[in-house]
Length: 157
Image 1 (tube, helix red, strand yellow):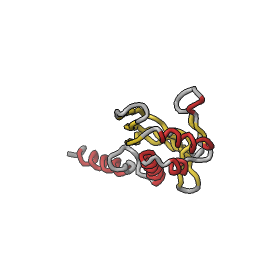
Image 2 (cartoon, one colour; image 1 turned 90 degrees about the vertical axis):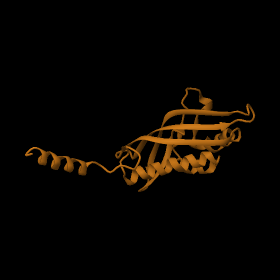
Image 3 (spheres, helix red, strand yellow; image 1 turned 135 degrees about the horizontal axis):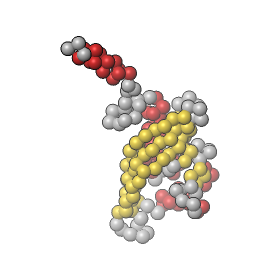
Image 4 (tube, one colour; image 1 turned 180 degrees about the vertical axis):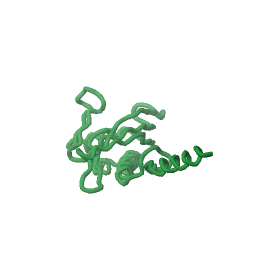
């Protein structure tokens, strides 16, 4: 009995020190975490709506993305983002995007957040097939803090 009470007190103290988590996730519940998740939610909604302008508004002027390949034809930068997204989105219909944030790593020195997320995308490309296509993968998105609490995408869309 002598050991049970000190162990119980220690257990309570340790659980009180652990950071609060966003419900349903393993992510620390901080204002930065919530702000980054909000950017990903806005991104998801913009993609589903095929709202190119909304995606561009989420991107920082330093935005660069190699499209996950070494081929330069799928590269994006802030200047080409609007036009290339409009071309790509014009080819698809019935877009549905699910995004699950797995991890967010913050670098306070550089004001960068690295988000690891999984996604499932379903869409139709009527020009090529009447069947619904799907894609899923794990990706990373980089965001940088602009001002006090605003986060902008710098790569990973």
